[in-house]
Length: 178
Image (cartoon, rainbow, N blue to C red):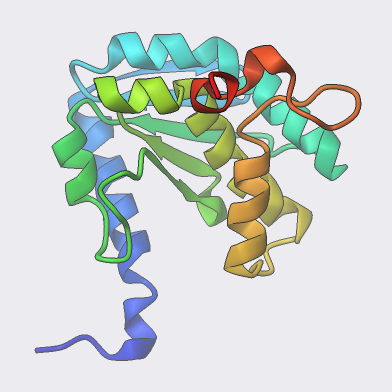
């Protein structure tokens, strides 16, 4: 039986909710101000490493978008990259390291592999996903065109200096080394 097209849009949300239920029942959680970071067994180190990054990144993004940040944000950290990939729908690619569910003020993160760490950082992935939440709040729940939503999320991955340009120390190594 095939799923009618009007119901396919809900499949990613169902997968995200299912992922959240699995995390709650099988791991731990850390409460840090507006953030609740829930993690699977084996992901506690990653979860603890992102806790101090979340508030400054969200405040930076919210200030740039001139919004009040969400009051509560749930962060789900998956231990196994394969389990994370299994939660995705067919519209996601294997390189996806995070997902956002803006309607639920929830982001999902997975560990980065050695190759990915060279080109990215956990802070950048968290900032990208937090940007999706902030954009959703800025637009008061109205959907943003994908090009705008992804473009702004990518922009906010890199901390900016006063002139809006990335500082040299914050550039990805692939740009810095050229």
